[in-house]
Image (cartoon, rainbow, N blue to C red; front, side, top):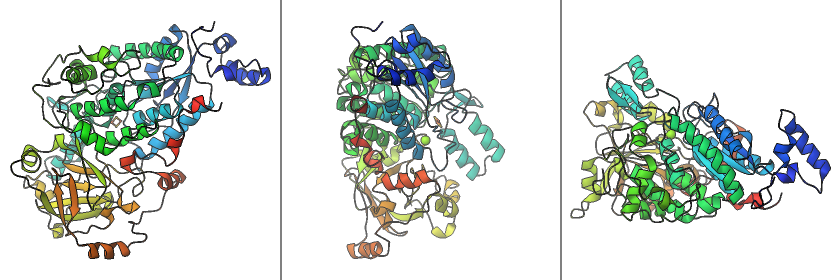
Length: 592
Ligand code: FES
Ligand code: MG
């Protein structure tokens, strides 16, 4: 029986079209061949897609294969039918040259699938870094009812009695190996200790960030982002998610009803409070574009910079994913922000049909060492700043990971404004960096700024996570563990160095970084949010003239998709979306 409240389901255009019984038969017959019945397909039960990102290729999301069984139970219990949808795999650690290249490919393929097949609503299986934005972008474009389900973080890692966090442990182990404290076997043991179970990275890297923000945007059931993958609550929330998406189809509650401008503003504030990854502005700016919402890096500074850091997770703090969940997860953080009047829009709608305020206003942190109270934050003014100058138009810096000395000297002390000036050491891509960083003839010292170019979306297709460059081994031995870094690539969310990232436009698109040379003086003023090479105009013009079209050359593409991607991609500051893709919105309600 069709629910009288339910608008006509789009799946019925395929499976039950009285004007065209022949096509109906053709659409129908093949889906019966594995045991679905005409009753399931023709009685107006919502057809729920599960956008499956779990596979053997994607260990971070693989547990979704199990969880989807509980989603299926929930969908059926609520009166729906499930069709599972394979999604192009995106594995952060395994995909060459970078998983980021595949975010837009997974987006494109899921748009085609959701649009072109009889799907009424969709459960988005999110988890590993790029799966979350890829799936939210597709849901935004197609705009059928959608709910996100996180696979959950891994359990805490331990090594010799200490918590070891994914990614973060690699930076530590790498420094120890460079300084000769451990050998290659020790390196592998240390790194592997951080991955004790199924699930995604247990640090506040891009995965925990984006899963938390999917909840802060209102796209996941409250409290679900942080539940560790193996916990029983993870299976239970999967069942609830399956039940809820069926109701959302009946209510016609769509991504555009939830992911509003106000929801993005909330998410920016939550990102500062959790100490979220610098990949977040790229992804959220991109998702917003697919909803025709203009979100810029300026918004991130304006709305996010003054928000304090509350969550004590590695790399900015000490704890890991299990602790985050046990302390109350995203609702506890959001509750703190609401009670302090810092969350700008508690009245926005979420997937459970209630507002963010109704869901979270009473949620309190149960362990205030893991989730701090607003009165006793870990760091004040912990959000990103957005810099510009003759090196680039826009680049992001995560201020919560800067050392106290650096902050006091260059950012927080209004009595004594000081800009940072240093000698540029320029690397053309990550291979050049690895080849030359320990070359003593470069004379790198603590007054240098390391610059990486050729690492943006076009230069290194998808953009490399390489801007957080370690100092040369001879400086590490002198206990200098970080130098300021600038670049047109990205930084892993699990790294904690003071870097100016995602510079747009990139050198390969003719940005100012194409013109900087080793030995130039670079001036960075964190209070004015500027970054400039102190080089006269005539010299810059001559350097530009020496380049083809004023752009840094790029290596050949190795696959057809790399070539298509490079021709179509917009800069990081504009969400790295495909040029023109944002012209297609709400497409489930147009055409078909
Ligand atoms: Fe997949 Fe971190 S590598 S979540
Ligand atoms: Mg990453």
